[in-house]
Length: 543
Image 1 (spheres, rainbow, N blue to C red):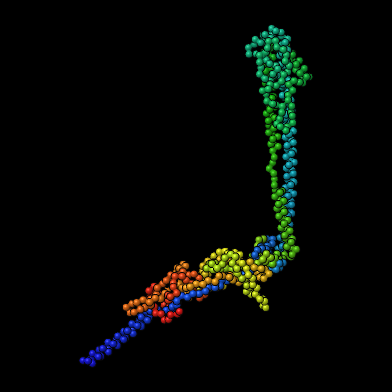
Image 2: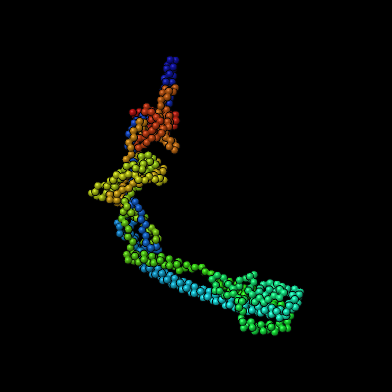
């Protein structure tokens, strides 16, 4: 019996040992192996540097006459050139054909200008001739119509005089008889073209009289026209008057007062019609004269052709200057070729066929930094520029400079920064900015590579952890894994707690953070991914 109990006890102890070993193995397998390190103070001396290419401060567009075929190009982008160095050549045959074409265009313009000038002169001569003819027509119309009016006026005056003579020769009785006629009234012979009034009993002879003031001014044309004269109411043609008067006297010897009055009214109507006809004729003649006097629209075709001619002459002068250099286009100043917009067989644009960075006004260096370097760089910050590829046997040129311009670029940097590889990758994926400094063209050549190193301020930080201990949560939020001891039913165990920290600065090895103490154990290495509350086994602790 005792032997059986001993065997059972030994078996149970063996099972317990086996299960303990299995449990311990399972625990070890499920528990992450980590290395920890406490935060420690560090001094940061950031390496704020980047590389770039030296260029001129100004850019020159080198071009020639447009639409010329390029024969050959002698430079490439990034090449340094001296003033007067040949950049490219145009095809000379094409150049001569272009010159001939422009000369023909100039000759054609000269013919157009000459023809337009002759046409303008003929047009003006024709206009002056038409004006002269219309003026002559007006004067002749005025003379003819005035003659008609004067003749009608003379007949009217003679009829009035015959009537007055009849009244005077008939005596008082005749006058009374005449005045008694129904509707005859009394005629005012002093107004031959006015209204008829009743005749005064025994009225005397009044003479020819003047035109009624109610009639239009029939003697004067518009301002600027020759004086065509007034009808001469007081001095009619004496010979005609005598001849007509004898006729009237013969007629009056067999006429009554009523008949003579009817003759006067007929002559009055004829006179009024003559005046009306004259006014209408002069109105129409005046309209024709006004139309002939109108200024015609000025023709500016000659002036426009003269402007075009001047442009053609300038083109020919540029072509001739290019012919004089055998079609060669040279650099106007010392500098570096920044862009070549032509090639052999293409045509010139007349704009920037080749862009040249001009060193005559000094040189500049532009480099690109990641955004996180901005805190070290301000306008006016001191820096040092060093040439990277000096000639054999020569010392690399260096120059102390002041940062002139800082501008956003929106692209990742291309310089070498004082950062670890992971941080540099993060910087390149984000935004960036450019820094420009002025350098002496005596020390640096166009197209030369140079490094810009900014003299950044040294900083001391109390809590720094290895960069591999820092983890990105989201955006600009970071955290570290801290290993802490925790009491459990199996005793004390190490568990992980994720602590949020603020990144102050980072270099190749260390990250300065805020949010942890110098006594905490920060996980620097782990055999597996850790989460909040994960149990870990700390293999060793480093002070």
